[in-house]
Amino acid sequence: MRLLTGIQPSGDLHIGNYFGSIRQMINAQQDNEIFAFIANYHAMTTVNDGKRLAELTMQAATDFLALGINPEKSTFWVQSDVDEVLELYWMLSSFTPMGLLERAHSFKDKTAKGIAANHSLFSYPVLMAADILLFKPDIVPVGKDQIQHVEIARDIAIKFNNQYGEVFKLPEYRVDDNVATVPGTDGQKMSKSYGNTIRIFEDEKKQLKTIKKIVTEAVAMEEPKEYESCNVYNIAKLFLDESKQLALQERYLKGGEGHGHFKLYLAEVIWEYYRPYREKREYYVTHQDDVRDILKMGADKARSSASEIIDKVRSVTGIAY
Ligand code: ADP
Ligand code: TRP
Image 1 (cartoon, rainbow, N blue to C red):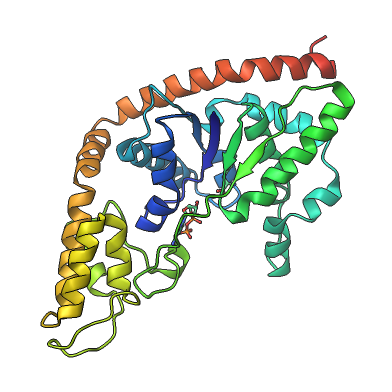
Image 2 (image 1 turned 90 degrees about the vertical axis):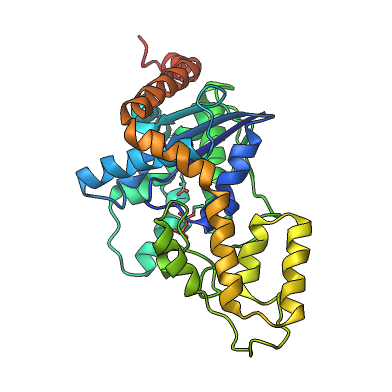
């Protein structure tokens, strides 16, 4: 199956991102054809500092390669390197009723908060529709917040097809219900916006400092401790196989150790888990030209794949004359 996903280049990745989406994408590479791109045009709706956007784009590419995107097997590129997407975006605009966009949550939520919307925020779902429709994916894996965008892409595709014939494959979304919400250091959902994240690629001392801040119950050292409700345990279990989870549960139930001990253990577990990824990342950080070559190869692959749809669209619309 062909799966397509867009990655917002939004800075330092945390373990919520990893267990909530990145790992599934990496694992899906085994049996599927993955199309994954860094959505730098989309990021322009929020990042207006040019130097910063360029850095974020390279950072996202570096991090995803380190975490296991396989550029030979998958198609991995930067959105703006396949500029056919902007052409399609315009073509689709004529098949996008204003009402459809006015109902989009991303736009409604911001305007409801009094944030002045610009056109890019308003038309963001049309660009996302172009991202999807250009590559004929079978499935678009998304978080709940993106379902509506895929539905909009579908609506636009239907309208276009009604006019010009079966040009676009109608996209389906998939929400992975098995994905647990990863708690942050304060027990709320881990999120950049809450400042409660544990970053994947962090300096060892800083990571330990962050882990030491995880909120836990005050229980005397010798007392047995609850593990089900413990933030340290709930983060640790993501990294542990069943036997190691059981061993950690026993340590909680036995008493004699404080949460400080469990935190040290968690820090060790996280550090070891990401060791191979960190090493790979260090390579890419010092070989940014390799990253650029990989992205160029990905853009070439993506372009050749997009040519079928864009040629058809130019032809049926009469833009090719
Ligand atoms: P943030 O909330 O830190 O801004 P994003 O919204 O950029 O994170 O999320 C990027 C991806 O990571 C999404 O697919 C989202 O579902 C997933 N994700 C983020 N935080 C978590 C979490 N705490 N638990 C599970 N998945 C998460
Ligand atoms: N809008 C998505 C997000 O904010 C990113 C994205 C852009 C995307 N284009 C896409 C996701 C196409 C899936 C398919 O996370």
